[in-house]
Image (cartoon, rainbow, N blue to C red; front, top):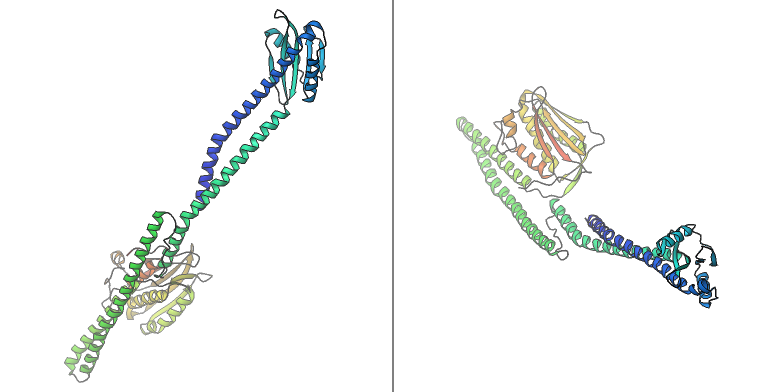
Amino acid sequence: MTRRVVAALVVLTLAILLAAVVPLALGAIAHERDSFVQDTARSAASVADIAVARLSANAADPALSSALVSAAREHDELLLLDKYGHVVISQGVPQNGDWRRLVAEASDQNDPTTELANDRAIAVQTVWGDGDTAIGTVVLERPTGTLNQNIANLWLYLVGLSSVAMAAAVLIAIYFGRWVSRPLARLDTAARSIADGDLTVRAKAGSGPPELRRMAATFNMMAGRLEALVHGHRAMLADASHQLRTPLTALRLRLDLLAVDSAPAAAAELAGAQEEIARLSRLVDGLIATARAEAVTEQLEQIDLHEAVHERVAAWQPVADGNGVKLIAEATASPAPIIALGAGHLEQILDNLLDNAIEAIGDRGGIVRVSVARSEKRATLTVADDGPGMTAQERSRAFLRFTTGSQNGTGLGLAIVHRLVTANGGGIRLADTPGGGLTVEVELPSQDEPPAPKPGR
């Protein structure tokens, strides 16, 4: 942001300087040149006034000799011509060969003539005798070294002044850019820390523009309320876990005791009640797991996806073998993707996906394939089974709570997976497995890609 502010202010200052300084410089240079030419013409006119006595009476004039000495001292070239164009007195010879043309023009127009070349200025002045009769001509050629030096000094002054203005503009832009950007950077850092699970972070609200200070204060208020809400939610989850599981455990124990000494008919009813208690326990566990997934604020950790997949596949292998399901782990990405997820979230995602796949196949036997791939800086985890699969309508509702096609399922497994994946900046998609079954594709942020913003809840 600071660079953009500096660039904008520098461009604006440069445009103002070009619009103001360049015309000013050109005008000053034109004025210097006009003054130089006029001064040369006045000098020629002064010599012409002095030369009247010399041309009219052919008498020596100390003032004319003094003018010649002054011309030599100023490095001027001076010629005094009579009315026939013959040189009467000279101080050097004009280097510009056009002086004869200028003499002819002055004679024809009866008016002084001046011309400014690159390195010389020439002034031609007619000498008038009695009765306004032209009796001669003065040709004065003056080098423009002094003029050129004055113009160069003017440009140097203007360039120096512009450089100082540009430097001041850069310093002012840097100051204001940092004045605005530093509070924003601190606010961004605090927001990222909260997004990563550190709810104790607060933004400094003592610097920057008033609007940013108010924004930081509002952000800190929001962070405090969020921290209180999350801590309260966690406390509620802990209380609910204890208050719901304890009565269910006690009820299950009582049913087990009753089933020991009960008649066969009563034992069958008690077995049904025990199954309902087990189902209710799974439902409570699923609800608590879903609530925890929605309240996820753990700090991210880097995980080797290949290693985690092989670990969970090995853990679920006995369950798969007991159901006649072949569980295969395929690692197609090399090198192994390193992903950034909350602590324990990948294990929960894999456990729920493997549990759903094995349960969908049932005891009729089948294959569950778990593969890992990398694409465009994101890791893709795929769990594919050859079970009955889902219809398009079932897939559209699969991530909603209590939506299940299994009689014994709770309808919370995919909901938990969806919450955990999206909370960590990933995405999940359901598709048909070629030949029948369901394929779940989970995209997760890799180590070199920051997690995407978490969706609002």
